[in-house]
Image (cartoon, rainbow, N blue to C red):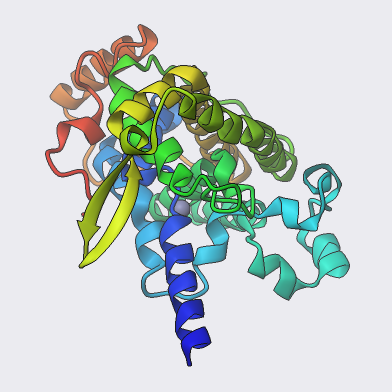
Length: 332
Ligand SMILES: [Zn+2]
């Protein structure tokens, strides 16, 4: 009996921790991705900016109701061996033939799920179905952003195997939320991806390459702290829980350098590339025709101004980031 309940607790802790980027990061990268789109796509996406920003976190919320959702957000690539990130077959069929589909699902399927979502978004463009375009664009963007997080590519996803528990939310939530004001994010303009499967695997490989640094920097930062200054203990739901202190997070962020900002920027860039590629592969439908209401003059002005600020790397500094404007940064 005791064993079962411990397992249940472990599973609960597990599912709570595999969230990607925190709500803040997901919202930021969807907003940035819109600025990187070509003109033919931009009015439609900008018109639905609020939807794409708010729904960027829907796949994380879905995990509460849908047991098949969790594995779509990560891949514990190191369970397959040290070099598996380079040797794992990129195509689902080949990977499943080598390891079995059940095993792949158990350790996470994010790159393969991105490919599935890419097809769905492409079909939505082909069918010129505005609701589906928005729905799949939001979901696809979420999984791409998750693949950019180093801790989404390892079985040691929370530092729990190296006595660094809590690393997950430190890296992907606390650090970006504390330091966003200093970030100068400017994703490049969207380009066509001739091979989207390869593109998402490159993202996973780049994320996994950063993983040792995520651990090392924590150890380095720890040198200047005692257990009392490194952590704060908070009571949640009647239980004492330990979190990294703000002071420690600040030191950790300083030693990490631009890594977190670069992964956010990269997420926005790759999301825009995928959205654009789906649109091209979907036959470049005229998105203006799919808009019930065109952009108003005021909205056009606003978009122009935001793009100018984006080009100057000043979105955070000039308070143009939607996720930082809202008082309560939770999902809606
Ligand atoms: Zn996620």
